[in-house]
Length: 427
Image 1 (tube, one colour):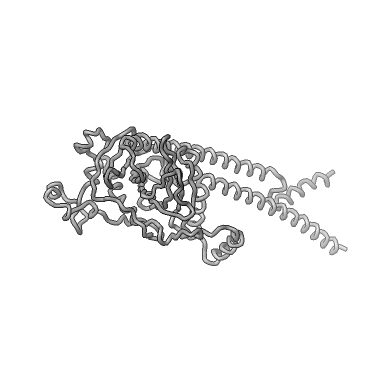
Image 2 (image 1 turned 120 degrees about the horizontal axis):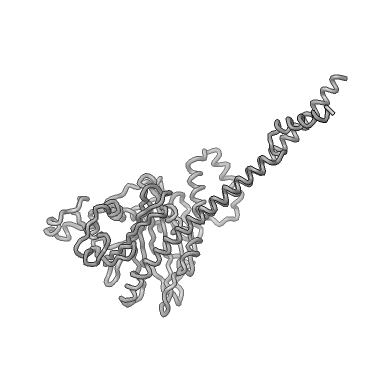
């Protein structure tokens, strides 16, 4: 008789234990699921779809061990059977990928930024009322086989065959972490001299003749209240650019390089021009590199072709186009304050009066960069608001979790039931 009571008590106690344990598992699973969903939405809003993909790829390459990696790959394969395979659109990334050596062209831009506290104006920059001078550094020449520039007296005696600006170039030795090298290089007239063009607000602009009446332009500016990461995001997030750039009538991602760490994309861009002019459209490759050791960000663009995006009547296709940008933060990528130097060139394809070219460069370019700065400020503000709402949502989840009596530990649930049963027994 006593044994039967003991067995029955154990069964009842086990039933209560299992019920409390099931409540605990269910509540924890529901809470973790909601947190994962909110974290995913949060990171997608902060980094964008492309940034979230890059974040997952970086974590996948560095953190997952081979057995777990195989399991994850199997799961992704089952989920993504109907997803279009990257690189299957006929674009050959092995031949069209921009070369990492293109970023070596930014070496003197970096030297210019580092030497800003000691920058001195040349006579031409003084006559143009420039804030800074790029000519003295950018036009320095080196002899063949040497990387140090010649002195001013030596340069006067030497001929252009003996020394040139391109001889001063040398690799930057960037930390690219096994990223593919690429083969497509930018064709720029490195041996042509830079000359001051104009200075407006926080922007200083120089130009260099590439061809007859065609110039490349170099823009320098600094912003004290935006971060380098936000500035990079605003330039690489196509969805967000459609919101703040009213001149981008069409902006589409055509293809993405499937090689991890390449950070290369093929993009179609239609740009609105003033009335009486046809709109310009571009098909171009974009690649960016972020060097954590040197605290530098590089962005490179160059015109390309794609069979699905041929030239259309009524629009002028710009094929000869390239740009380079280097971003250097004051301290860290997430801290406010940065310098940037943008160098760009495009051939509009048809003769354009010089006054129209001057209008585009002197008015449209500073306005576009100002809009980019404002868009970065707005993006940082909206991200801060989303972070505040996200942490507020986490607080609500925690309150709901602890307030529900069934969502305590199973031991606490049993103790509460025993405590509630004692008063009834005393009665």
